[in-house]
Length: 366
Image 1 (tube, rainbow, N blue to C red):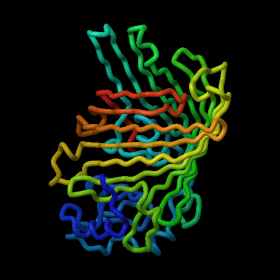
Image 2 (image 1 turned 135 degrees about the vertical axis):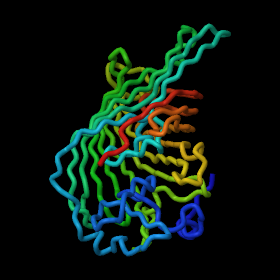
Image 3 (image 1 turned 180 degrees about the vertical axis):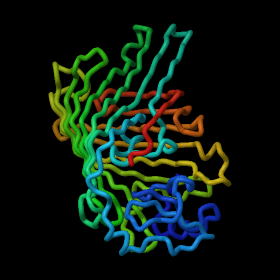
Image 4 (image 1 turned 90 degrees about the vertical axis):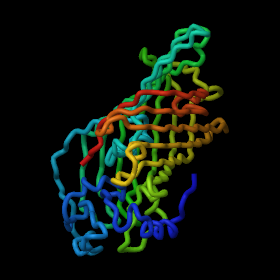
């Protein structure tokens, strides 16, 4: 996989026959299907843009119009529910990734006749956003604040008692608050989370308080861009795909509960960890000349690193998946996934390959 630099990307946008001219994007520069753009663009800063090469560009808002027209404020809060594979698959509670650009929660079953073993596995995140406040979209201002609840489940169960050590039994309940700051041609999310981790029988393992920072770029052809403009936003990758590089910085404090014996508390009853996470994803372009098989494809690879300042240990986790959506609404898919490293919740080692049926909902957060 190659990553195209900013200067080369701009040249590629104008030269690619499949996406010549302006792209259909949402508030944060993320590509949406052309039919979702509607008619001519309005002067609102939150409106979507659409200007194919055959259309006049006169309707595209100028930088002055885009920065002086406030968003609608005091809108009634509408509860939104989401189902995804994990936080990287969701993106954010304020602006979740589209269904077509997500893997979804997984459910799989395996029977091994040689070892007389049946394996059930489920992994996913279900969340609800019940409060969101929006503010005028002027530069250097907080543009929104979001509050939500979530439950993250990660379960692998083997029927053979000799394989009990390979089981995973984590259920995480959490509260999340996101603050969005619009500046430097990007939306910068500052996220605070509080969590309780238990098993599926209700035995608590640990509690966690975490802070995260994650940028979503909004590159423009009208004003100068910054390095943030190209992070977390789709960029052309050949004629059939868009590549998105999404970095995240994290700091967390995790404390043991009920004498937890999880590996993360091997020598200490607490852990203070910091580190980056980077997700690279490829999503099929939603254009008529792109084969449907590619349009419905989503490929993602996440690598996370955390250093524990209490124990001096480090933790690494590779999480990769390939999903082919099975329906036009992108609600169901077939997912091939692989995880190797230490789980963030407990520090337990995993090395798992799965073929799963995946499901998701909650695309539109507007």
